[in-house]
Length: 199
Image: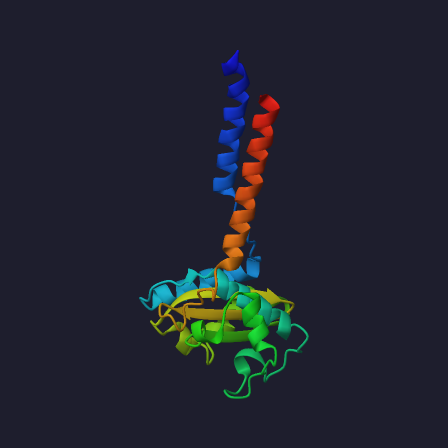
């Protein structure tokens, strides 16, 4: 009799543990971003360079920057065609970094490259990065990671390095740890309620 009451409890316990293991946020990239990443890595492979790995923090920052660019028109002097030193400056740059739990010290060696391509045609997007002033960055072995964000006709690529100054490692991990603590508390409370119900 005691076993029959405990069996559902252990089943729920097992399901809860499995749910906790698989509990993770889902990130959905647009096709343009995936196509560009594949194209960039093919380009680097053709040069016998290592492929770039996805960096979620750089992707977050690229998304934030793309959102800032979205209201700017595409012209012959924007994005990859920008004359170095005339890139737009965002007064809220530190706030954009903070939204992704980053700061200037862990992003200093990274590279931020915006491009504006009407309708984000994949072949044109790739060309805007690999056959422009940005190609030097893609040819550089110091870059090991990448984040890509897009909004409207704008797509932003953020390259990261393996150094602390370009790693795009979050300034603090308190946000991630608080989410996992909340999830853990939720599961413990659920298990306690089930245990009291079965007893």
